[in-house]
Length: 346
Image (cartoon, rainbow, N blue to C red; front, top):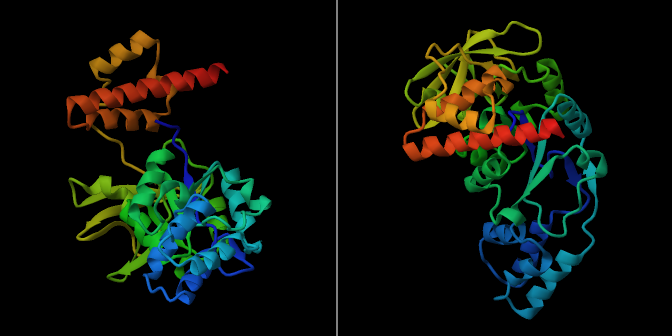
């Protein structure tokens, strides 16, 4: 369990930077084709992207003639060129970090790719790489693993990129909302302005709504796969969207057949980025007796958590469907509170 913090998961090439040389995977594809090999381009690209280093990448082409492998080796060890920062990239990362967002770089970049320039890298908290995960961003399992390993709360995460498959369809299939740069997705500078207008994440916010917009029956809607848990047992759920000091407005999360849920508001455009607030839960949030016993034994208290974090933790325990899951979630909560107490002492 981790502190609830908004997370911006951002792509590198084509989103934050461009490169002075064609991408490594494309150059390896050309070398493979020059050898007369017609294996699928996607397979070649995946071999490059998921290799942790140059030697591992070469081993994936052991079945090719020595001359072809020599051509691939030349590309892997050639001058990678430089990464050039795209307009608005530094402003976006600076703004997000200043507002308390955690920044994760998600990249398919293989060995031999130029590093992210220092003026951007200093804002990145961690990097999720295909080479380490052993799968490409086009695969929804990449995003599922990122969520699990980095302890990302999907309700508070936004994926930003430029590729429809890798940065939109795959993460949405894994339950994450997305925004593509360019076209209707806007610009990096525009997103920085949206973040600034929304302000810091309020303690009582249940999530953030910042995904791509669609139009349906003449109304604006925001695609929100991360809100599927709100409409598992119902077809719609009432919420409130607010940004900055504005009071916000009512909206509805609707379940859609064979498509991700969407947020629909009153006639007119929805805010591009807003904090999601849930109506008060009228069901009592009583602390289970078993959890009370664990907390007393460890000398821990739930009131060190914000109201929204406390409700979230108790709801996770209450909604567990088996005794084993209840025990596991109680233990996770106790472990989190103990770690938090250690941090406060330090």
